[in-house]
Image 1 (cartoon, one colour):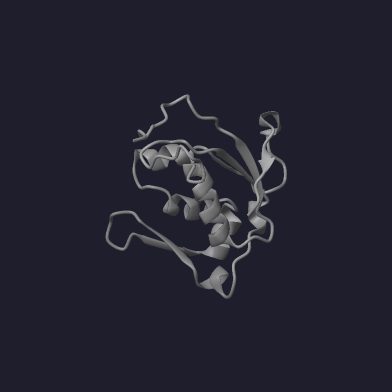
Image 2 (cartoon, one colour):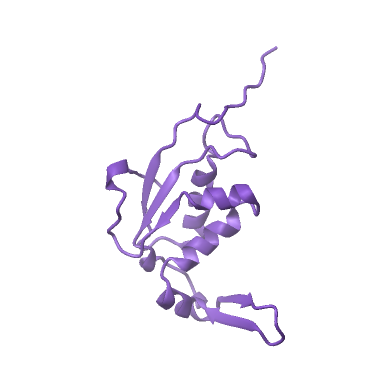
Length: 143
C-alpha cells in the first residue's frame, strides 16, 4: 500500500504567469485565475495549503461583460448605519478603479478565511499593459 504524501512549505515551486484580460469575459477569466492562485492543477495540491502561483493581469480595464451588466450589475457596501447602503454599478466602479471588478470576482471565488486573504496577495492587476514584474519572467497563461 502506498502512503499519501503532503508537501511541506518550500517543497514546491511557485511560477509567475501573465494574463492579458483584453476582450476576455470577466467571470471565466476570474475562475481560471482563482484556480491558478490555489494551485488546483498541481499534483501536490492540498486544500488547506497555499501551493498556487503568482498571476499578473494586464489590460484589466478592457475586460468584457455581456448583455446590460455594465448598467445592471450592482456592487453594494453597507456602513452599518441606518440608510448607509451604498450602491454602484459596474460602469461607475470601472471608472473609479478599473481593477476592482476583476479583483472582487476572484476574491469571491477564493476561500473566505486567512488562506484566501493570503492567496489574493499573489494576484497583481494592472489596468494597462505596463507592469513592474518583468524581472520575474512571467509565462503567458493559456485560458
